[in-house]
Each structure stands twice: as structure tokens, then as C-alpha cells.
Image (cartoon, rainbow over all chains, first blue to last red; front, side, top):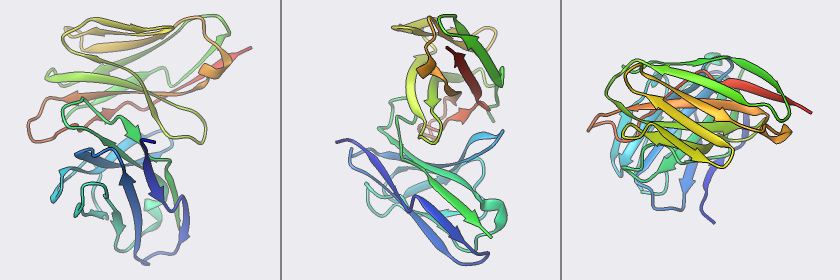
Length: 113
Length: 115
């Protein structure tokens, strides 16, 4: 089954404690991206990757890092989380040239205390 | 960069009526316009999309229209059903060789279909 998976689905942490949210897709997609969703602000792109070892900033990259060492995985790293990073995070993937995000992961609800 | 505005933010209709959600975009170079449906607690799902070389696209009860001159596009849902209740997002992709599939999203419309 074609899918995008994320882990963990829910996470409560404290300010400053490094964390990683994993994202994996099994469709051999070149393009992967991370979004955060906040009430009233819609979906805002954090980072995207057009292929292995190719990543770039989206609209709201501050406080986040990503890596793309393998085609299927695109982890989101928060080196020193802060309360303003409390949000719902979605990973997405698609083939390049298909237009836009075709498949979203199930979401990770992060709370930073 | 691209800016997408979406209206209305909430929309309540009676079952069987039509619903229309409108979006405007700022970058005339945008050439791809998808719509996503997000049910409560679920992930966004692509429901329909349109490219700038066509003016309208239909898929059963949903349709999208695009006016490139005015830089706006709309989602039309006919014969609405309670299961259409969700938040709908429009998005636009500016043509940029270096940005791949990067999308800019509108703020969302919460559609409520009353039985």
C-alpha cells in the first residue's frame, strides 16, 4: 500500500530537549516536504527536498533542520524546541513534476512545554 | 513570493445545496492549483487540481474553475452531503525551476453541511 508514515504521532516534550520526527514514504518519490499547521494559519512549509542530499528552506524554517540521506526518509529535527513550535506537523511526498503534494502523512501533534 | 487568500473562512450550507469556495493568488507565474480536503483529525487529501492551461475541471460532484486574468480560482461542490463537511484548502504553485513542487496554501474554509 502506497503511504507516507510519520513517527511519533503524538509527542509532549520540554523546552530545549532535542527531538526528531521521522517521515518515510514507500512510493519512490523524489520530492518530500514538511509542513506545520496552526489554527487560522493553514499549512506552512518548513523545508522541502527535491532528492537525496538536496534540501531547501520553505516559508518557516527557523528552529528546524532536515536531512535527506535516503530517498525514502526525510526526518525533521528540532535541536532546541521552544513553545512556539507547538503545532501539528505533516510530512508530504510526490513525484517531481506532478504539480504538488500528492500524499500527506498522518500528522504529528507536538507540544513543547 | 506567492500569497494565496481564501474565502470564506467558514461556510454553512443545507444538504443538497451547492458550495463555492474562492481563492485568489498574487504570482501570475503560478501554474498549478490543487485543492485539499481535511476531515477532522485527519491528514489533508488531494481532491482535485487544475493547471493553468485549462479553465475548468470536473470530477463527479466537484469542479474547479480558474481565471488566470483575474488570478482567482474556485472550488464548486454540488449536491452537498454531510460527508462533505471538512476544512478545504486551496494552494498555488509558482513556476520556479529551483523550487520543485513548493506550494503556498490558503488559510482554509470550514464547510459544514447540515442534514
